[in-house]
Length: 368
Ligand SMILES: Nc1ncnc2c1ncn2[C@@H]1O[C@H](COP(=O)(O)OP(=O)(O)OP(=O)(O)O)[C@@H](O)[C@H]1O
Ligand SMILES: [Mg+2]
Image (cartoon, rainbow, N blue to C red):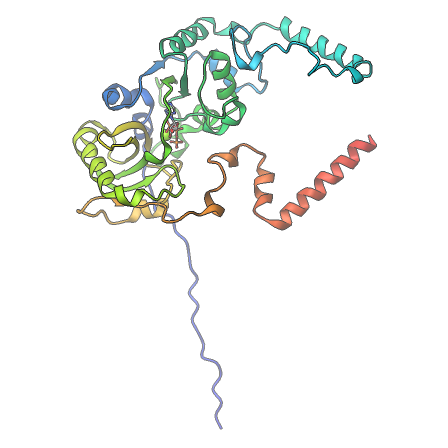
């Protein structure tokens, strides 16, 4: 009897390829705040002041590792003087802690003897203070492209709302995103050199604060002058979204055709809009390069680069059901703790390793 062996199968190796996305330095420049704001300011929700040029001393201050803040802000919640009273006076420990208190006092003296960090950019510091006042005393800051959304945990109210220059400096200095804007914004350029173009200026943008409803913010992707896709920016599940999606798409499509397309200089870009209820007006929030460094939200960049554009209009994608596992974490929280902890939280073995490492380190410290 002839026994046939198992049929031989040809295994084709799967190779993942990433679609090329072409980005020029000019595309990145076109998304810098002042470049588009000057054309479209009447379509934004709130007033903004753009401070430029930003002195190199201010950039150096933002990049320096130490966080020394100016103390000249009246009423800053960061420097509230604590009055001693029976609730906060730890009288039992007072004697033991005398030495520590002396050392702290010396350190405080050292710090107050140090020149204020703003002494290297006094007139820019004053410009910032004046602009905050003109904008009603509450602003959301950003540099040319990026806002410090990853550093809101440093703020008393956990938002980007700043009431004075001191809070603004703390927020900007604590943000990796701001750091990226300064040193790496042109790294996504695929056509030509990735250097900061000659004559390009950094700018500090202060937007008058407003309370936004995050469920009504959308990111819209434009490829080769066609609006191809729309995603909500907030990836929580909103039951009302299905009832309004057609209206939202129509409004954005009209805004794109009549306002953005005729005046925006790049062929491909991603723009963010806010459409508060009752959905009568589309407001422009930001413009970003059509580049992998821009968050593609509910799409993948491969999809966006290769999807067929549909004459019937853009593809709207929404979150279809509550997904507590994927989206329960706060946005940008991955940038708020050391990377080792984020990695470990996704992998049990890594978590055990991290715990063992921590334990070892603590024992070593005890032994020292
Ligand atoms: N004036 C404002 N007042 C209050 N919140 C604001 C204001 N402007 C923007 N925001 C909020 O901050 C968020 C981030 O703003 P923006 O899109 O300009 O930052 P970004 O750094 O460019 O973000 P991304 O990296 O996603 O492109 C917005 O989605 C909006 O919710
Ligand atoms: Mg942006």
